[in-house]
Amino acid sequence: MSTHTSSVVTILALALLLSLHQCSSLPLSTNGRFIVDAASGQRVKLHCVNWPAHMEAVLPEGLSERPVAEIASNVASLGFNCVRLTYATFTWTEDDKYANLTVEGSLKSLGLMDAVEGVRHNNPSLMGLTVRDAYEKVVDALGDAGVMVVLDNHVSFPMWCCAVNDGNGFFGDKYFDPQVWMNGLHNVAERFKGKSQVVGMSMRNELRGPHQNVTAWYNYVQQGAATIHTTNPNVLVIISGLKFDTDLSFLESKPLPSHFDNKLVHEAHWYSFGKAHQWETQKPGDVCANDTNAFDQKAGFLVRPSVGRESVPLFVSEFGVDQRGVNMADNRYLSCLLAYVAENDLDWALWALQGSYYIRDGKPGNEETYGVLDATWARPRNPPLILDRLRLIKQTLQVPPPSPVALRHRGNHHKNYKKESHIMYHPLSGMCVSADEGRQNVVLSDCSKSSRWYHRRGGHAIMLSGADHLCMRFVGEGKPVTLSTKCDDQLSSWWSVAMFQFGNGSQGKRMCLDGGNSQPGSTGVVVATTECDCLGTETCQENPQTQWFSFVTTNV
Ligand SMILES: *[C@@H]1O[C@H](CO)[C@@H](O)[C@H](O)[C@H]1NC(C)=O
Ligand SMILES: *[C@@H]1O[C@H](CO)[C@@H](O)[C@H](O)[C@H]1NC(C)=O
Ligand SMILES: *[C@@H]1O[C@H](CO)[C@@H](O)[C@H](O)[C@H]1NC(C)=O
Ligand SMILES: *[C@@H]1O[C@H](CO)[C@@H](O)[C@H](O)[C@H]1NC(C)=O
Image (cartoon, rainbow, N blue to C red; front, top):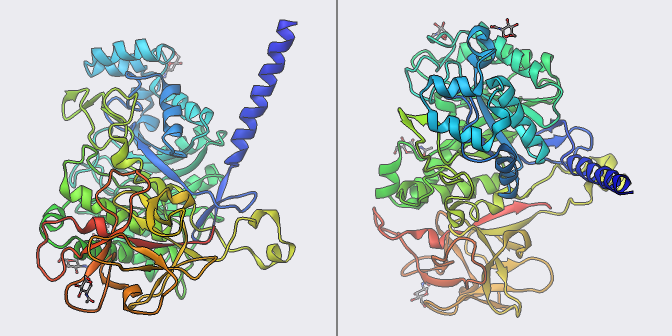
């Protein structure tokens, strides 16, 4: 009896697991600029986190800190639907060195006795496995947690990435033999072929250095893509650009001739590195406009078709900030990036998951301040700073328009497709603007349920979409904005006074919409008007980002 009951329970549990897996039904494919479920055509937006496994120990970091199943389920519960799991080529090509190297052997060879004890305690079943088998167990644990996996070739020689002259930067560099690289891609594609959670392979991280050039790029990335695609035709083939993956601009005039049966995705990285001085000393709106234009010209344009070029998905496969909140440039850049990623509804992967490394810069247990998890790997480092601010970009905001056939049949697939409207996003708090319950004021609220707005540039009203004829109305300095039916006079005219800032009047002292400096994630904060920050002056000490709002297009 009890045996019977428990097997019924097992079968039910299995059925539930299978149905959960079918939610993110795989494999994936592309439709124009969207990554979609190959079978149904429904959009699957990647919102991932990076998990490195390419450093000296050639193991996914953190196995000494928490059980692998717990880390995998944390990834899912933190709201990431996939992991960009890195690896070093040599792990999969140098058999004499790595085929029989165990987890214990690898950590001991680096003198990491604390990590050995940590793995023995947290993941005893991995201790005696080879580093390759342990990596596979991590891929499996992610699959069991319902998390998709992108396998990312980060370096050839296992080490921290990426320096200009580290021998891993470009085809032909000391460690970067193109043939060995392709053997690595083949071996990895072959090894993980049967695993449906492996949805993509990222061909090479951050090409860079003195030898990089466009001619070699076209030559080798097409060979690498063909290697992956012929070995495992199910996975997305993800191709990065030059200059540390910040430059794909050459594709504007010369796109790749093959999309590998709708598997081609491009990836680009966007950090505040090198721009700290600008963010700290110039008007944030100007720096953001400049940074956004640069990213758009170098990579963002790929999601829009042009004459002779089809659109392709763009995966912002690395961005990130010091999550202690101590870096002013990072804090300011993040609002800028979030607005752009939301407006363009890009796929992305945050750098990074890891709270610490087995060893980095010669220091065992070195902490990662860009990590979502703290050094214990058990809890988020700073949830309000990052997780709440990522909420909107985790949402699917745009879906492919239904085909004419589907429209005629009103197919189920496209039941979510709606006419375009706008969400009004406040990236500093990660919240969105809504009419409050009494339809008197406007407040910050959860983006997934927020009001939709309509605003035509150039001093027009900001109208609440849908039902009534209601718009935002200026009442006075420091006062909450009210909702009113009087929408055609000065007090309901909003001008774009600087990037993301909306103010009254066309000149003189101006009052801007302001969402305040509330803790990210808090709802119910009243949107008021305060004097517009940073107009006119060359530098700006205040943070005008309390006044930053972005109109994000959505059709779901
Ligand atoms: C790895 O170990 C297996 C089993 O002991 C052995 O057959 C194989 O030759 C070893 N491979 C290498 C590359 O050392
Ligand atoms: C382009 O890169 C390849 C591979 O590193 C190299 O052999 C070639 O000399 C480079 N060409 C130029 C013009 O720099
Ligand atoms: C951004 O600013 C830099 C330096 O001020 C300038 O060289 C560059 O052209 C600007 N880029 C864009 C896209 O505006
Ligand atoms: C905006 O509103 C403020 C406060 O009422 C007022 O002093 C200012 O003149 C207005 N600015 C313009 C350009 O209308």
